[in-house]
Amino acid sequence: MISVPSEGKPESEIIVPTFENTLPYEFEDIKLQYDPTGNLKAGTGATVWDSSFVLLKYLESQFKKGLTKDNLSIIELGAGTGLVGLSLGTMLPNAQITLTDQASVVPLLKFNAENAKLSNVRVEILDWKQPPLLEQYDMIIMSDLITWPELYTPLVNTIDLLSNEETLIVFSHECRSFEKEQKFYQKLSKKFRFKNVDENEQDPVYRSDDLYLFTAKKKCE
Ligand SMILES: C[S@@+](CC[C@H](N)C(=O)[O-])C[C@H]1O[C@@H](n2cnc3c(N)ncnc32)[C@H](O)[C@@H]1O
Image 1 (spheres, protein in one colour):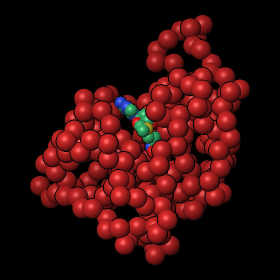
Image 2 (cartoon, protein in one colour):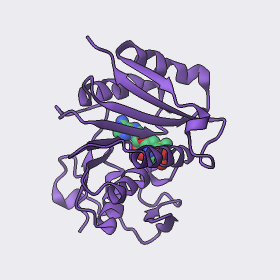
Image 3 (cartoon, rainbow, N blue to C red):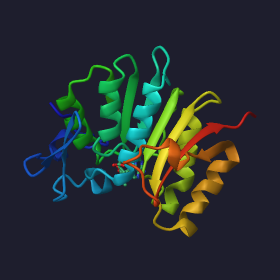
Image 4 (cartoon, rainbow, N blue to C red):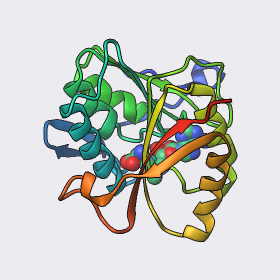
């Protein structure tokens, strides 16, 4: 059963989304529903964005090279349909993976996670504007989130709350306006060191000149 985030509303006012008009989507082993009609009102979270493939294929290669540890904890921010996190869930059965997004996206994300039947994956509401007091993770992953300048500060603050100096942050982004997006990088660089993943280290197919991939770590205080 899909539980719908109620945001404090009485049960009578909670609208249960219908998944009737969503469409099946498949990438390698992972099967998802997405929502091109906007039926679920999940906004940008209803679509699988190109930079998520760049992130996923890079992470896959890093995990094949041995990037892992016992009980690795991973959190994905703005997970959307869940392609990256759910794929990692199948790839890393011993890791604990938390997929998060804002409340309006969580029904679709939960639907996809429940269909994937992965005991190592959970779905949580996490709105960057109201980050709860959270645990810190070994890894934070994100794709295509540097879209809204008004959310740059809440997003950087959320990353800050979820990380310590050991946390590896890996994120991808499709550049649409460098002028606008550079403000995010400036804010991030106050607390984090980050570097561009060279094209040669990325997947030979799933990369593109306008899709950027970065790793970041928190600076030592
Ligand atoms: C362009 S989509 C990317 C989705 C997915 N990561 C991908 O690459 O396919 C941006 C995501 O950021 C999420 N988002 C936007 N504002 C947010 C907020 N305040 N808190 C949490 N997530 C948010 C959206 O719901 C959406 O899932």
